[in-house]
Image 1 (cartoon, rainbow, N blue to C red):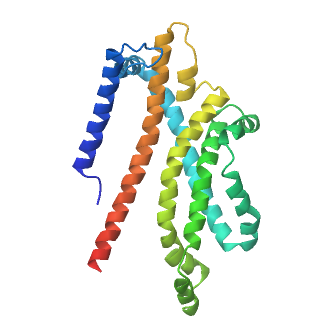
Image 2 (cartoon, helix red, strand yellow):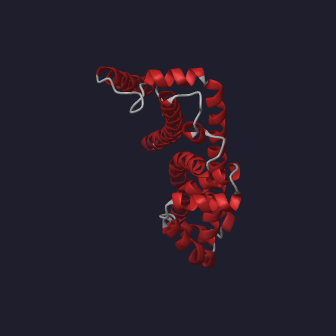
Image 3 (cartoon, rainbow, N blue to C red):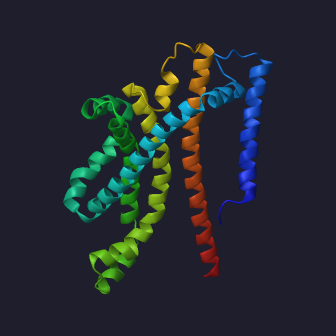
Length: 260
């Protein structure tokens, strides 16, 4: 059960309708551009300066993807270690749960001091923001197993690897994909926050906040709105793809249950 043409058409129509209402409201109520630029003004700004936005979009996309992939790899590995080592679980897992609620904006200045003002600090912040949901959900999935299945593995004298690959990992996959859906969106937030706090010279956040002498207030606000729209597009695209994948897996399970 994948994405149907009806779903794509409904989503496209809703986006077009939202932009049309936005455009009409700015024109009917004569909203100044420095308060709320219209979609047409944002579009004109994005088209006239598309090389600039493509460059900064690539930087933000790179920070987001690298941070997300590192968070997925480290989170899955650490979750497995936590489940199979009682000592490490008692030492690390409570701290991970506590650190999950710490505002990441407060940690961003420390990462800038430790890693510098380059791309490394932005990647680390994207990793840090998206790391916690992955490891917590993966641990939950690896532990939430019916006791009968574990007893069956012991009766059959299954090794640790067979127990992990045949029982624990398949049971943890729904939890993993759910956490990846959340982490893919959070990685964008982490990258953009790092660019804002770090006052870097690359990335969408920097492009939207840096002043240009030849560009007036309305132009700068259009730039800011265009960059924010691209940030929103990254987050919406990652969430939509993850949700579509989850719907596909859910449909496959329903068809499998009906056959049974």
